[in-house]
Image 1 (cartoon, helix red, strand yellow):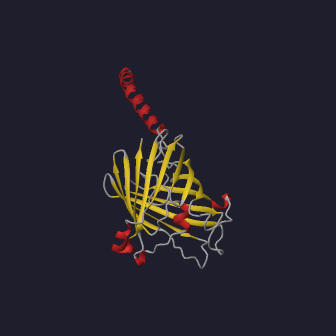
Image 2 (cartoon, rainbow, N blue to C red):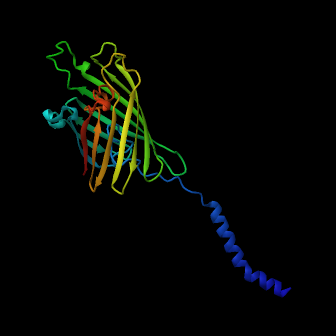
Length: 280
């Protein structure tokens, strides 16, 4: 009897320790950790990505589109007819980014609001809202003498939904509503819808292949415009991301490339361009 009591006394710490380890294993539930951003740049190519600026980060962005390479040597393969957008972007909080920009097409102010993050054991996607208010700079009073200020306004609303599948593949869906107070085509509705999509395939530590495409769902039947398709390369170089791409749209503002793309890939009517982002 004494031997049994002694054996029980000696084994008690081992049994208690094993029980504690078992309970610890039961109580240890994997946490819903936030997945790193699906995209490294603010835009995929033309489409906005679900990436926001970090709180108090300030971005200086230059977006440049040369003319069509179809111009050949006469237009120096597009180098003679470029358009540029200058944009300043600031992270007010980790969930709100605001920006102001100016291109040949429009002056615009915009904002991105983070709705939800993709997590490891929870929500499978990130969701962001993007909204823009623009003043069309291409509608000249000399061509439209009866034009009012409000005729120049354009409004854009997007819901951006992305998923980072692994370290090398990210995809995004971007249903879009945009309204132009003035459209040149009488048969085109002022309120327009588009469904955009894009993705990023990482091929090295600092380089990825990006592409995006959008379908204009209520384009008028006699419209001369086309759906935008863009393919490019992202290069991360320390404090900035350099994006080089080819696209059939020279427009940079959302209404420009979603509603007024003139180029056609099958005819060689494409534009070389780049987006340069510097973070301060």
